[in-house]
Image 1 (spheres, rainbow, N blue to C red):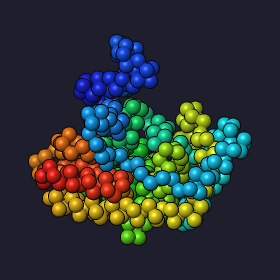
Image 2 (image 1 turned 120 degrees about the vertical axis):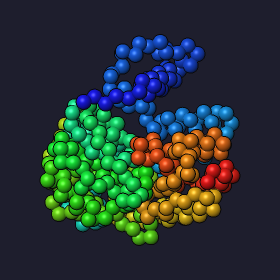
Image 3 (image 1 turned 30 degrees about the vertical axis):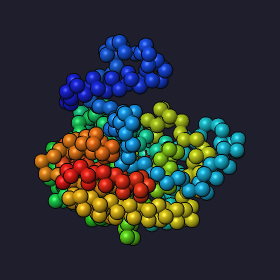
Image 4 (image 1 turned 30 degrees about the horizontal axis):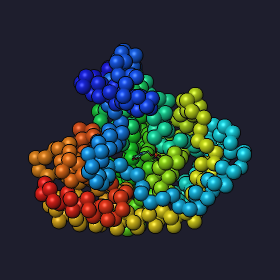
Length: 426
Ligand SMILES: Cc1ncc(COP(=O)(O)O)c(C=O)c1O
């Protein structure tokens, strides 16, 4: 079954690509690609819009160009620098000519061993670096390529909603049918797996879960993870766990890995990223771990598509995963916790009612009664110069919320909250 979207979205996607191509070609004056015939582009673009954060970046840039002092609390991109020892390890790696050649397709063995070492130390999970760990160019890459490895036209992918957009977008591009699993405050933002009809389970090939959760900040306990493993085992579905925020927990909260559940490695692939814990978003380094046949399938797509991450970056990742860097994570978490508390207090004083998350660096803020997510985000940007992400951009079930990221300096965050309070929206 083809999923259809309104033509306007298609046209928006095309126009973003065209603008991008023109910028790349440095031809703002006489655009090279403006009159391009749409039929040159693949049909699958009709199933996707522009990437959410690309779109938000464009809006923020437009406001900046109008002279607005924009405070961007849209994207979750740590403002703190990567810890020094990790940077030093990269520099040393760059000077080693052995890193200058094509990387190992599965990821450098030292990196795979370091990931296995981290899982053993942090989660008590033993992984075989030769088959249960695969190096990635960031988890976004692995999430995308796992989808292409696991599903094709007509297959069902079970995707929580709201969610990180890549799960659904890649499934749609691969021709699969996305069945949204609504996450509601009433259920602690956990999907109701028992409510999924048997015939949907029968067509399903892939289930995504993501705890600690972006965008809601919710966490899942081992009982939920065990239920997900059991149901995926029962219905022969690949369970994909996105663990991007496992290390960002407050007041001692320690997120579990799905692989802690007995038998999970026969069902589940987990994505562990160095981006958020080690403030390495720009470096593009992550790993897929667990279910060996799914990693092998992912590796087929990957090795036919990319050639792995620069080995020097992987060696820096090895340094990051050493136990002494736990202190660097703790340092950043303390900063986010302080910001979380100041932002929650300031928003409450302004009449909003954000829950206090025990993990992630996001606040999932209910919009004022009767005001949509898009309207709230648009007013906050246009009238206060603050970028928030409208919850509806994470799927229809995200309506009624905006997401605020704590990855801006305290003073900027305080100022953003003051500006939002000044709008008297709530
Ligand atoms: C839930 C989630 N998964 C994956 C990613 C991608 O992270 P990476 O930098 O490893 O590609 C993000 C980035 O924001 C995210 O929020």
